[in-house]
Length: 440
Ligand code: HAX
Image (cartoon, rainbow, N blue to C red; front, top):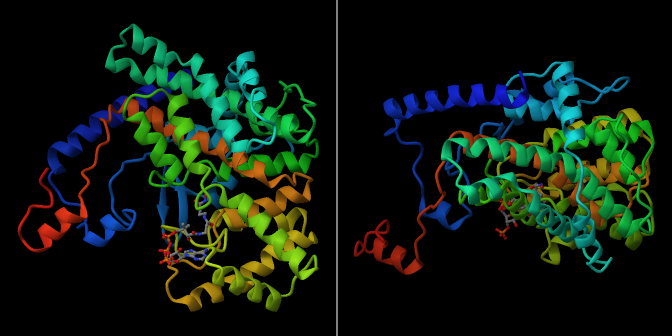
């Protein structure tokens, strides 16, 4: 059975289950929304269904019930490697079952078959000034790829709504297959004088991405497998996942949806934080004129950052209230492969120094590091020092989660998303008992 046939069976079964759940329990209430929540970015408000992963504030992310250490242990690895293959995580998120070696090999081969990038996409990238931020180039390349959308073509021809998922599935698979080539092209164009590297059809998805970026080291390939796995999904409410889902609810095709999600990922409070972390550490080292600042120096620098009205990048989270297990997984990788790297050691010293300072402010709900606090230092070790590119790496990985979810959105027939908004005048009227805040 193909992965598409397996997905169809799973989707039909869940769709029937959801109908039953709603029939019996549809009028039950989940939580009470406060006025503060409406003004404060909907924090803690349940308003979305996302099948691929679930975030616990204390424990961190679980993909279909499996924690990061569990997926590291249970997902198939590349031959001779010890990190999970992102193909396996995609299979798990899409199908809901752990894949075996054969499933993962099939997915690698499937994505290789779909990976051809048409020339006009490279032309669109080449039309931009070379100094253009890599995330801008990435989004424009995704938009240029939109000419390939099966969903858009079939919808224009009059697609039956029960078949939406099928074209969305093919678009999503094609996009995932093509993104590493596009991202590597942007990297080599901007930083390696346009000296491009052809794909290697014998490698897995992340291994081939590392190869096209120009990094041959086996340990770097392992890092890319881990990186592409742990950045893929963080339930549905984060900006990139929510945006992709929201835009998809208008029946925009996966190219339009992913480009929108990637624009959200490019914000410094979300995915761009990974470049901000390395930029911040490099500036600290330069100002202090040392490669390995002491704890006291770091504390001083953090205080300075805060006094300038800036955030400490890589720290804090809207949902998590503990050290991000994605940070811990990268720390373990560092301890295993590069324990003496001064930049990696600085990241660990920051981990000791920063939380007490943030805690002492009394307003930050989570003083602990998130995924972005660690990733850059590992990349720098292998020579990938061009930190403006880091969010593109995050984006290639994030496509796995948000596009698996988009397949589910259409397979389950979710409707247009359209929450109610209010004005402050209407809130004031409601407080005074003069108006109904919920009225139109
Ligand atoms: N440094 C300084 N101040 C911080 C802070 C940090 N790392 N984290 C939170 N705060 C501040 C907030 O700005 C807010 O201040 P004001 O009341 O003055 O506006 C206050 O503490 C309360 O914020 P919170 O409730 O704890 O956090 P939020 O849910 O509002 O925001 C953020 C969560 C991730 C946006 C926030 O912690 C932050 O800006 N962190 C730094 C940027 C970062 O690392 N982003 C990546 C997050 C993970 C991710 O999406 N990766 O892609």
